[in-house]
Amino acid sequence: MEGGGTKTNLATFMRDRRDDEKQTAGPFLTISRQYGCHGYFLGLLLVDMINNEPGQAARWKVYQREILERLSEETDLAAEEINRLRREKPRVLVNFFRNLSPRRQQQPSAYEIRNRITAMVRNLCLEGHCILIGMGGAGASADLDNGLRIRLEGPKEWRVKRIVEAEGITPVQARLLIQQRDEERDHLQKIYDMKFRREPAFDIVYDCSSFSLAQLTQHIIQAMKMKGLL
Image 1 (cartoon, rainbow, N blue to C red):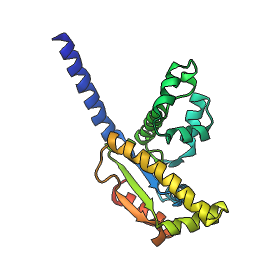
Image 2: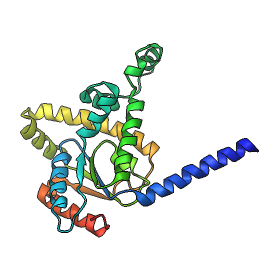
Image 3: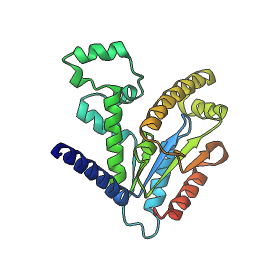
Image 4: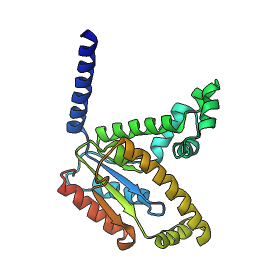
């Protein structure tokens, strides 16, 4: 009986904690994007306009690379290596031998990295006044109120042109990069969909080929105002 009561109390505690988080979270904005849709530049425009809104007291911040850098300090791994590892698919033999290695604690698995990033992203959403670029932000905040989750997409050839201009590479190289990055992000999205089920996954999906960054910024800010985030 005592053991059962402990489990019940723990379950009640976790449920109450989740309810408290829902009520105290935000405001926050998450931006998910296909490769070639420049979400970080949009985030910078948004935070600049939001922080200059009349009567806006709290300062909003953009987070993307900053999350990887925080985790880099925790693990002594380069931010680029963390970003690569978090997209890595499970490899049974590699993971088996890694578990036997005394260096395992120095080299966290993709699963461990994704879990830590999810926790960091969620904490930022709870603190509020943040714009989160990628990093599974929509999934990590799936059960939290007082936020807006947007998705940026675009036709493939439009994205190719953008990447060619931004990276100075050939269209062939750009298409290969898009295929690689899209496969990686599809893999991550499936993982997040299994862990954080929310339908639909996003509040708003934009076709970036139809709007300029300035137009997207204005529309998103208006949407945030309609939801009472600003």
